[in-house]
Image 1 (cartoon, helix red, strand yellow):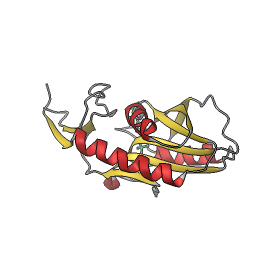
Image 2 (cartoon, rainbow, N blue to C red):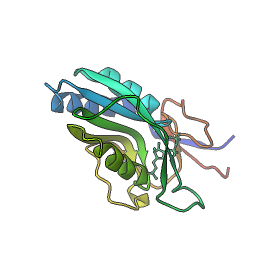
Image 3 (cartoon, rainbow, N blue to C red):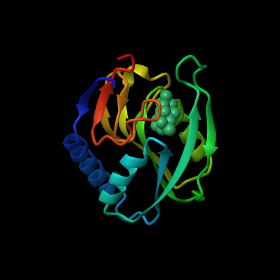
Image 4 (tube, rainbow, N blue to C red):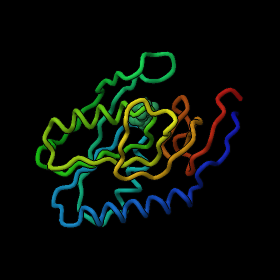
Length: 175
Ligand code: PRP
């Protein structure tokens, strides 16, 4: 079993999710048609907690992408695996991500969803790793900046394990 060291405790995450939900609720007050777009699979836990703290009406949908920016594969290519079920033209869309790493996934989403003419398009990410960004990254609602270490928990995985830890931990995949 690899070593796991807590980076963000359950309490810190929950406090930050409360803050983000309060800001989002204030910013979208009066918006009739807010759609949260969760990026599978990692965002499912963050999205569930965030959505349940919002005080504004909203709908939820999911999209799934495969990023080729990892490991020894060429960087930057993103492929759509599962599209939204919803039409987004004229709606206020908020993309919800667990982590922004190279930034290619978010850039792809902004371009492809932006082309569908939503009323507005903003981004919310629980974490980002600035040291890994390969393209300019603008996040409207950010939880935490984290160092360039492999993290698991609260939706984040290593080889599809550890997603359901209640906190975010640093994992040493070699241990
Ligand atoms: C992760 C994460 C983001 C993406 C960010 O997904 O959930 O969607 O990588 O990486 P980028 O900024 O370098 O594009 P991953 O491809 O690991 O799939 P998963 O969510 O199913 O674990």
